[in-house]
Length: 142
Image (cartoon, rainbow, N blue to C red; front, side, top):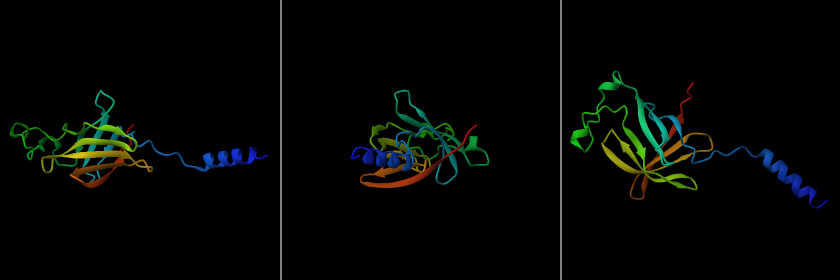
């Protein structure tokens, strides 16, 4: 009887616990926190995530240029198609030590990403020890 009660409690504990999101499963299409862009995160080819800006909320998305890029040769490229996130290392909580490019200021920041329990993507951009987090939401595709 001593074995039965803990085993039964374990079954109820397992059944009653909601499934936790895998924090490393960041792949897919994401709507940025500002709701002005879609970032498609796919495998870079080495098992790590790379995210490309595939849509922006602008009257003519193809006319929006990467005008703040520190490289003058890249300032004439369109923002749609720019790689925004790359270079991550896996961690127990998702992805760390990556890069995120902000086309609004032309700067690249250290970044961490993880899938939250609610299925949203928490993306952090950091300068030194200070980080700012954004929550991106999954875009349902057909």
